[in-house]
Image (cartoon, rainbow, N blue to C red; front, side, top):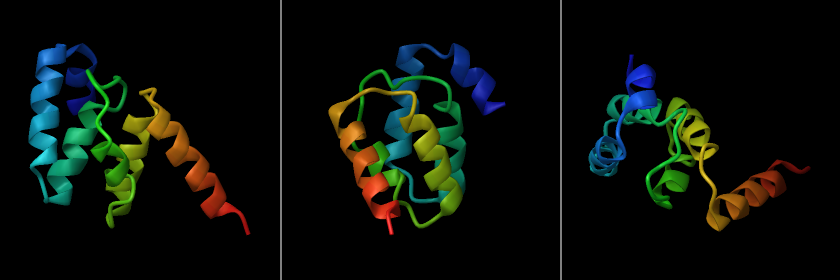
Amino acid sequence: SFTVWGDTASENDLRLILDHLWQQTNPVVIKNLLQILRRRALPCFDPRLIDLCRHPDELVQCRAITALAMNQHPLIRAFAFERLQDDKP
């Protein structure tokens, strides 16, 4: 499965996956690539991952948020606070 391979992939392989991810428009492909990043921090954070959290496809959003959770960056914190504000009545 994609997740199992992602658990042991080298940082170089993850960079290749990310390069491929940023070129995709097909939601099915995006979902599969995000599945690889599900339990790993990115070799270097890219704010485009936050953009995928706003994707029209709900499963892309879900997988992007799961991948985002594995990383630390001030933009992630700001995005989380933004989401909290959006959820308030």
